[in-house]
Length: 496
Ligand code: NAD
Image (cartoon, rainbow, N blue to C red; front, side, top):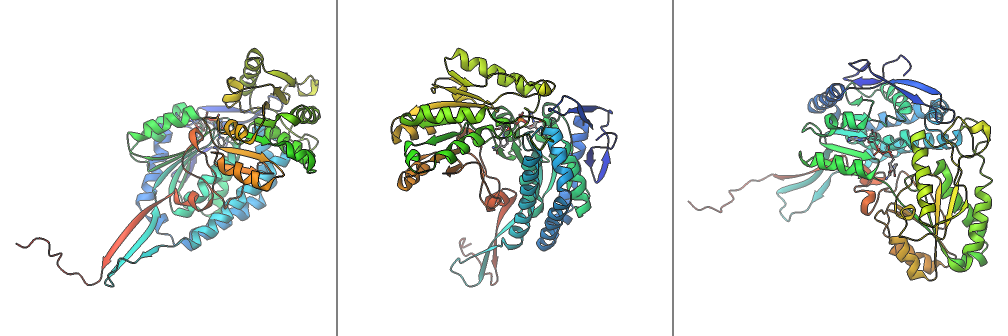
């Protein structure tokens, strides 16, 4: 970054082998936030070879689990120490507000603490096979060399959901952050070294996924690929990996319904419901895989609810994320803003009713950044592309329902299945609806929260596998059954 080498291969920091670099843009003002080395496919192959060698020498996987857990704790301590500088770097890179970045760094710290504790308590299983001479054990072993690929919206958070369990399990790895937002991952990798991660256990490459992808995924030297990003990329990686029968876990997009029942009007929950729908869709300018971008609201309250939402959306203070007065920042790039503008045009041509937004802000102070106004479309239906496709920006679509069955049907009418919200004051209804929804996380009378101790992942095209929780560690482990006969006898099957 800015002259320092950004690739970590075999325990040594180096520049790209062809001297290539990439400008990293601060989306709040279009300035160059940093210049980062851009790896070549050969660099990526070196990184995989380094991780392979480090796994095969067996030192890291043979390190006692208590020592690995202690290392994860040291990482958490260093994250806490560097919280402010990491948060500032994340804000300059992604555009999100400093308050959001601080929450991200706290969450990353919690993930390391959680897997430190979990690694220390997860134990082997003894199986009773009915023969006292036989000791049957099911043991967990590290899966091997992992390639960890992250998206741009939560750069350090997403990669930590992979690095922490991979280290806890005893794997070695090649880390590839998004080429759009690599800065905190570079700083964090230096911090991993400081915490004492042995050379070659963590290798880091930077650059375009299309260029580096084959070197990282089309190889028999990798045992597990954990990918978070878009559906098209997830599919492409899965196809390539299938050639080598490499295990792949993909965490993909979402088009997440937020269902609001009319009973909230009489329960005193109205303002909180409006607030949660607003935050659920417009936080980080909607660039959240679990953003509640589809409001599905009961017809009898829809007009009033949408009016209140629009009034609040118009008051959202946009600005540079470094300014404490900003409530939301820009989109991550000009390219992303162009995508959102195309979706808005699509919505208009499909006949959706624009309630608010649908334009860049007029404030001259924001002219240099990739800002876009919080946008609400009412009178939407599921035939529209803006309802079916992940827009990944500040666009809320509104659909209306008349009874519970229709609400559930609409909520499940998506090829994704990452997250959903349900708002009702009727507990029994709440329970019925959350159980009927086919989504990986469902919030009842809340929205957006998660914890390191509970699994995260999607149904349908939102992906396979799970991160976080005990399953998030198991993804990085192979299961081995050891059958030990302490008093062997002939099998006695063949008589000759
Ligand atoms: P993307 O698919 O364009 O890129 C993701 C990563 O894959 C980047 O690091 C990119 O360089 C790399 N990549 C691209 N092509 C590759 C290839 N052929 N081989 C290997 N790597 C390749 O996604 P994005 O635009 O960075 O992120 C946005 C997407 O991520 C959205 O769809 C969002 O919903 C999803 N996301 C999902 C979750 C989740 O938990 N399910 C979390 C965050 C983001």
